[in-house]
Amino acid sequence: MTASFSQFIRERQYLHNLSPATIEWYKHSFKWLPNENPSQEELRAAVIRMRERGLKATGCNSAIRAVNAYLKWSGSPHRVLYLKEDQRVLPTFTLPDIKKLLTYQPKKFYERRLHLIILVLLDTGCRIDEVLSLRASDCDLDNLLFTVTGKGRKQRKIPFSFELRRALSRFLRDFPSELVFATRKHGGGRKLGRRVVLRDVKLLCQRLGITPPERTLHAYRHTFALHYLRKGGSVFHLQKVLGHSTLEMTRRYANLLTEDLQAIHQRVSLLAAWP
Image 1 (cartoon, rainbow, N blue to C red):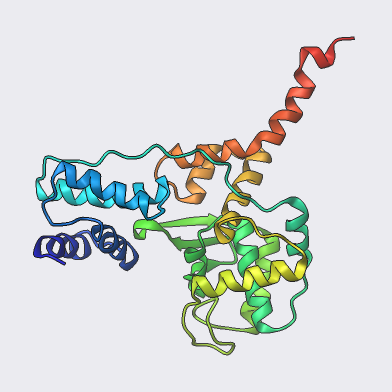
Image 2 (image 1 turned 135 degrees about the vertical axis):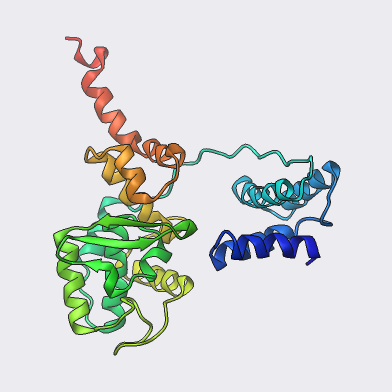
């Protein structure tokens, strides 16, 4: 990595206090650039290489955001244009799938830990890393609130249900630990890895006869958002719960309500009401 890239990353790390994951994102994105002062033509060629390597528009735009931040910092007059992204319907779990997951009766520690992770994801809409980072001190069982640290190290309070409190209380009673979802059964242990959880979730889905949707772990978040809106929840409140900085992403969940719109339309249609 060149001196200019290194200086940019050092400033982001020590002056802006960015997380290690964000720093790695910058480093990975800079690998697409041929040098520290690319021309406009070289920037276009970099995007073409991304596409040739199979990156989708969303993946390209993620790298482009990092590159543009660097270009602005370095004083370059160039910028990379963002690609138009397909507005795909976000994957979710079906109601029968949710019923199977909720009625599953785990017995052993590892089964109970996994089931509780799924319950937290479904009940709160948290990102998987926010859930795996939870500590016992982050769980306010009296007021039914989690304190989670999201993107940009921003903390927020998230409510949870009485039902989740019951399951969480039993788990913490039986397996007390500073880190709620630790790798070891009796205290201590490290933070669980995302890939380990994804593997175990897919195995459980297979066992329960569930076909896991794409982006399986994030699909729990989509599922939470869908049912939040379906039950009359406010888009603005949903934005706060999910930790979105703007309404742009939150509004995408409205596209998931196709079945609801069809049902409403049948009730209000002039043709359906005509005698």
